[in-house]
Amino acid sequence: MQHPSYWNVLLTFMRNSLIRDMTFRSNFLILCVSSMSWTVMNFGFYLLIFQFTAKIAPNPAWGSWGKYEFFVFLSTTWFINSLVQAFFMPNCQEFSELIRTGNLDFALLKPIDTQFLISLQKVEWSALTNFFLGFGLLAFSLWKMTYRVENPLQWQPIAVVLYPLFVVCGVGILYSLMISLAATSIWFGRNQSLYNFWFYITNFSRYPMEIYDVGWGIALRKLFTFIIPVLVVVNVPARLLAAPLQPRANWEWAYIGFTLLATIACLWVSRWIFTHSLLRYRSASS
Amino acid sequence: MYDRVVSNWTIFRIALEERLVYRADFAMGTLMRFLPIITQIFLWQAIFLSQARDQLAGYRYKDFVAYYLLTMIARAFSSMPGLASGIVEQVRNGEIKKFLIQPIDLLSFLLLGRIAHKCTYYAIAILPFGLVFFLCRDYFMDGFPDGLTFCAFLCSLIMGFMIGFFLEAAIGMIGFWLLEVSSLLFIYMLFNFFLSGHMFPLDMLKDVQLWGDWSCFDLVKLLPLQYLAYFPAAVFLKKVEGLELITGLCIEAGWLVFFIIFARCTFRMGVRRYSGFGG
Image (cartoon, rainbow over all chains, first blue to last red; front, side, top):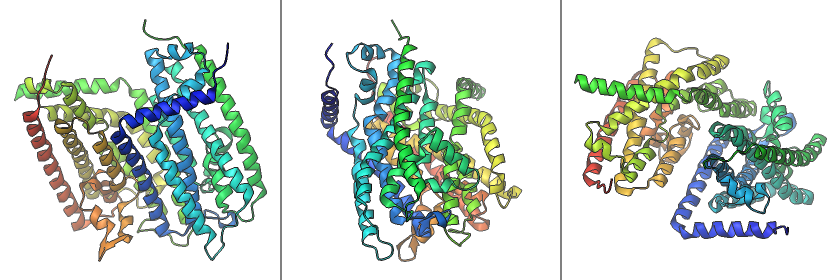
């Protein structure tokens, strides 16, 4: 049997979603403004924090996250989250419904990889608004850091090349976590709490990892780095660009290597969970 | 009168039993809601460790954590998930007709349902709440407040619940005119999250000047949203005391009366406008 061109199928999914969005343009605009408003409000919170402090540095010996370094971190969070929300979130949410209604039968019958079909069928274009907002914030922060008098940013070509790669790694790790949790709905039937669990767990990835290096936070940092690696999702790419630690410590390169391995491992484990959960699928209705 | 009490009690009992079906999911969900507090604990600790000062906007580090924990209680009272969207749905699919032909008042019915929901929630959530508050008892540096302050805290929580209910019910009533209020609800949720004090203590805005002597806090204080999270927490932490506390409670009661009247009026006007077709 001839295999379909996955790239062309993905482009078709993207085009179809865009056509659907453009059919209801006002709704699309409202969705864009809505997702942007949340992000702007969130940004307002961090602006407020930096009214009271110049930097976030639990231990100055490890370096610190100044205002613009933190904004680089924040824009990286927006990049990764917007990509996950645009490409995977609506599909993973739909997956639970497909199982409950038995409509997963139709996906299983199609001559294409089920995980691919389930994961990318619908693209939420409006979620990409935050991607562009992130781009604006990143450009502004890097410009400010480059032209400041004290400790200006030294551009490293390797960092510029590695940054997009590790943003993609971050998306990969979050996707793996999401599809694994979605796959559990085959066993549970419904997994509302597990989606909340995903949201709460990924909440840990939204701050620099150094903040956890105090007291029982160390155990937490290890848990969310080595067992559920959500802490490396944003930290590694953001650190590559903002480099709050000067000079770069050796353990950082270890983290970079670890992130690559963790991404591969997460994708492999999630694939295993997904395929094994499908074996338990019993369909529904008549 | 007796019949009314009996019917209200029946509505309450049915709603209570309905909610108790998913008690395990409830307890699990409640415990998970505390997870974001962990990140807040470490974030604020990092901010305080970054500088020499031991206070920010009048809050010590532990006060910040205590504040976030208290807003969890306040939000447990004032949040009304699905209330407005539920009313709009009933208007749209015609289900609202049953309240027009049966001797049951929609707002009272929904209020009893919510009270039952909250009672079940507190009965089950008391365990995870108790556990988290016990583990975090050291963050309450000034200990438990005196009896009077605690009474004021309870009053602000109960009024916060009522304001939350009638405010969201009033938004739901707009469904009689617009049929689809999801974007409006989203805007409300957005402002609610930011301006109720759920995200940070609102008095941090004192240092953000708007114009002249007016700060952002002065503006936010004019809105009723602060009673949904900030005000009860501020009362417990004694950030609001004496005359300011009495005035605050009176203004809160004023907002409550306003929203009761507003929700009732919009319902009455909406019913007059409503037209149902088919079976």
